[in-house]
Length: 229
Image (cartoon, rainbow, N blue to C red; front, top):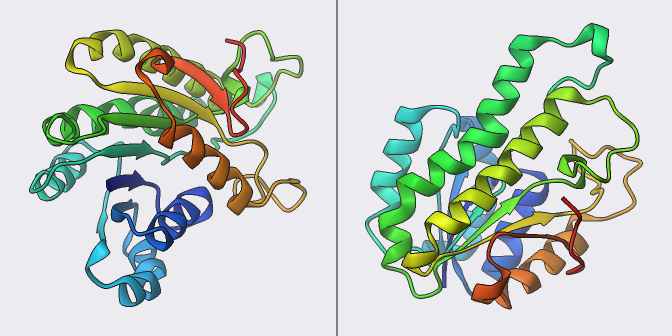
């Protein structure tokens, strides 16, 4: 199987790359910077031609187009839209609106932009699955804390976008699913997070592997439990 993963140089994205390579899959990894490419060099050396990595800024149209032109050389079975930013976590009176716009551009619009650009390659693939790493913090009914305006609002927008495109792509046989990874011990999740990336990614990969058409447009956590909207 051939996978494309965005935000692949660290944290959850890096763990996705490692686990997929270890089980024998082929991966095209998108990373935001040259530094990210350097982080993947040991895996490129160890796994030879099964890992390719290229710079990809999901908020930049030209970057996404260039990435897609290379990836489109071969069919894509599964796309994992993982790239995301936390935005500034602040109170209502301290909201930085430029940061909110940037967070939306990456978290909400970026995954749709990448999916659209890779649609021809996905339609030539055998699995036709797209997974979007979102967050329970984008659940309206589960929000009992407030705060984190940029992050919460961007994930709500992503959730609605995926719910929408799952309908639009239904006729082309593409399954779209939203995945909450849990509170994971990464740079974004912080050192107090209880869940190691390996456990989170292992759970999400099991969900992706078992996806069927009736799951399209739904929202699950890494343990397979449905998350309320």
